[in-house]
Image (cartoon, rainbow over all chains, first blue to last red):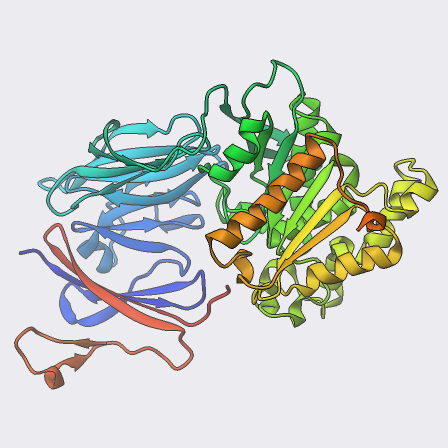
Length: 488
Length: 49
């Protein structure tokens, strides 16, 4: 039987944790583990495994980059020794991030996302010498999401492998560590659309400040080589949430089978490259996320994938704020906009439902300097300005701009029962646009139930997805921008 | 958090960790890691989301 180690985690805030473990020489006494409070702390056999969220120099000669993963014999570590580290992962650059680890009896799989590609580093642990040695790395194919977890990490080296891609339904297979590349399929989700003639590509746009912004491009069926096709661009860009490849029956059926393309932007505010990528678009830096999304929209056009008139964008919640900001600040880049369950009034968002809990993300409108940044992009507060900009900076005919002709065909969807983002955001923007006379191309759909997810059950979900996707197909493919106010 | 040994009365279990009134969660688990025994507790005071 092995040695006993007691560990107590004390989570001080969402990101801060204090760790306590039993003193290896006095098992009844708990000692605080001396690591920074945002580091994660795990175990593998008799080793501690530490993910360094920031740069760490625990002892002379041992300096680890932010994002590194290191191991150390547990007892020695808890006695305060810092001399026997093994570096299991050290990111090559700021586009490489640790994404978690999994284990089998003899192997540790370090999952990473490197330049948006999933790469798993496999390490063998020798129980006799108590050392890790590197075996090989596995790269996920065709931009798929990939994970491998131990079936029974105490007793075997068998793995469950899960893959998910834009054109590949979620599949479960088994493999044996360290050979992740050879797997036996167990079960695959239903393939809902024929993927023949489709392809997936990872591309990159350049944002206004020079930052490279990755995006996935899925090309639909039957698009002639080099010909622009109607395209839907999806994004979120907040709360350190990453956009990862995944199968969507509705995207495939609605857009890809119809000869359209689908793109997913990995803009700042998300977690694609770790906490730094998130922090780069928080509070007064939020505008960076919108520049990034606009940069991807422009790149889709300059590279011939689509044209501005046949490019649509879609996003929900914080992503609804993103697409609402596109309608307000970048209307010339899009032929259609769908904004789902959006935040739009960034002055009063703190007064509505869950608003106060997002102050850390967006900023506090009661603080003058943060309020200025919020009002600078808040879609609700920039509707009049969008008319002026269209006339003065984009050469729009004054009469047409004042009728809202510079605004792309736009659909807002929300729910009466949304208890996270209040429907008042979408209601008041649509009301204000109509009052200003610029709401002619704006449609609004409010479901009476369903909460923040937008729909209560699959029937309601099918209905609202049909409304949203049909709106985009009509606006982008048939260039039918929908009914105007006068015909409603 | 009390440590209870199989076969002994629950009342004899000894408190080894306690959350605080401001915590939103205080929990833990004990596990074997390849022959090495660990106990892991955690408590959260603030949840941003």
